[in-house]
Image (cartoon, rainbow, N blue to C red; front, side):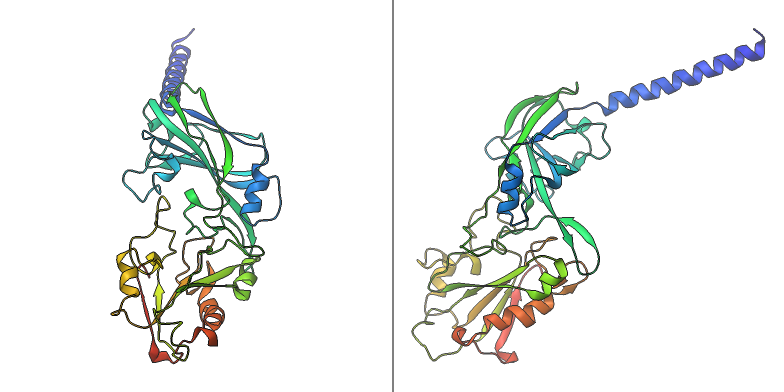
Length: 359
């Protein structure tokens, strides 16, 4: 073999060795746990029924793996992820046409699987964890603007997906997580029901509170939003009446519009609100309720509009290219139904005011 051939052979061998080393390092770096997720029989049908979607045995959505060291609360409820410093890490992957028995593998080397705050499974230290699978179920919307989007439709839950109606989760497993690729199996078997019972012929959209002497719920189907989204869309308002409302049948009242996020959006574990309009109780057992039913509270009607939608827990009640004509729905549909003669409100502009936060 001549010198030129020998040098060429040596360079090829060196290049192959370097390539092999880089590939080996990448393979080691990419190693991590593998999670194998299946869908239990009948769950797809139940999820569509509860979520008020058309009947189907298949689901589209995003599967999540949530891993925690804590056991006192389900991993999915130790958040919401990204909103609390002590929330557990999670990873997700979009899936389509998921059916009973379909197996989805979430692996460390799959570029479609990524998470927060740890990007990949390889960053998760080995050890014992409590793990849970979760699926945010999508609905396909054929919108009036010509776009077709897949999103989750909330139903009285403030669009916090980890407790959102019609989504699916697994039992919690205590497992030893290793980086040897041995699959950890989880089955999506439980469907989240509506936070409050849905009345016959009604809808879970925007929620269904129990009405009382001073608390009423006005809910309507918005024709404008229904046309925009290509499926029935409802908006609502919680109405808080003053103490003497039933005693003075001839009186009419000014209105305060309490513009805020959905009352379920930031209550992580379903606990009742501690103060403000949403905390009102007829028995007067908290500070706000005692004040509202007492002699110093103003004699006004509080209207609390609700507009959770496929993108967020509130529309901010403006017309938007993303969420649709919610401003028109508020002013031309919802308030028309709220301002009924039997509600006895004052309707001139200077006799209404607006309050709220996050707007």
